Amino acid sequence: MDTPRSARSTTDSLDALLVGPDPWVERVRPALADSGAFSTRVVGTADRAIATAIDAEGVDCVVSAHRLGGTTGLELAAALRERGVTAAFVLAPDEGSESLAGEAVAANVADYLPTDADAAELRRRCREAVERRDDERRQRAKADQFESFFATPDQFSAVLDADGTVVRVNRGALDYLGTDERSVLGKRFWGLPWTDDSRRDLQDAIRRARRGEYANFEAGLPASDADGPGGDDATRFEFTVRPVADGGEVTRLVVEGREVAERVRLEEELRASEELHRVTLNNMTDTVLVTDDGGEFTYVCPNVHFIFGHSAEEIHELGTIDALLGEDLFDRERLETEGVLTNLECTATDKDGREHTLLVNVRRVSIQGGTTLYSCRDITKRKQRERALTQLHRTSRNLLYAETHPEIADRVVSDAASVLPRRPRPSTSSTARRTSSTRRRCPTSWRRCSARFRPSASTGIRRSVGRSWRTRP
Image (cartoon, rainbow, N blue to C red; front, top):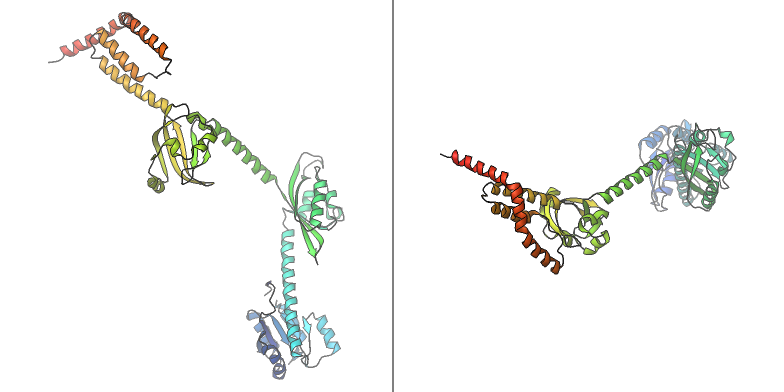
């Protein structure tokens, strides 16, 4: 029944409950109903009035005669109040008197107006009574909300005068301060036992709040088990000072404070996590790239130079991922369907012109405008080793059927040239000199190599071939 309502418009229709005998109703009802500003309900007794006010929704005003059979209008007002009905109550007796008006004021009715008053005056007074009662409801609701907020046990709450004098503190604040209420009331807020040099910040926050601003500051209080204001076990608080105005002038300041230990801990953990990820990204050899739907880079891993030789800024200048990894790396419709594509092999050329074989994983993401994440791993050396191992197996198989030393030498030289890494090409003149020299030295070197190492191998091969021929039917 005591639900706070928003401010009414002067054109809103009000629901009035009229309580009285028929002759009284005939005089009062036209004054309200004929204007269109009121909708009226009529009952003849106090009991019916109580039942209607409790059961019916939206009764804004009860207008009652003074004499209601065996009871009076003032007794009806008290009965409604006891049952939680907060609709505005206007007493409208047939004949007014000063003594009855005094009794009405003492009974805390919303208004008193005899029925012989002007009809417009009756409507105005009823509307004003409803508006005052709505204001009281809103103020009561605000007070209840403040009391609920003020009673929060793990929160530091205080009410100050405009000059910063403490006029009220909650139990949570007293627990944090480790003192009783008498030791705090009447002191300036910045005179409380703060553990750091934050008094100047407190004074500045209160000055700004006194000007009507919301002010924030941080300060420390001694923990409950600390050895005093100078102890190391201090509790950090984040405070907000809110101005409370009355008639346009700030008369009170409400201070709300909460421990920031959890926030500080989370911030430290976040900084440590960011540092870990930054160091990891800077030193890992895999490169991570993020692009938007158009392929333009939104993020480039700082270690991109390990594979591509470019800085992050130079990668951004390339424009799109196609300029780095080539076009048609994957099927975009398949990526949309599966969400992630793994082990895509491609080749890319670094800043110095060297070709790299990459293994790329692609995933759909949503990170600050980026929609596609690429993880690139350089597998160039692994591919070279795989080719060398394949060639070694082929060479070994071919050597089993080599019959002469020159044939063995030619096979080894030709196969080695296909798997050994190429060195940077020297100048033309030095290349010519080295080629001529190699041609002159190569036969002798291979003869020397063959004479030293190949007989046993050749003999083994011949024996193996001989055995195979002897076992053949």
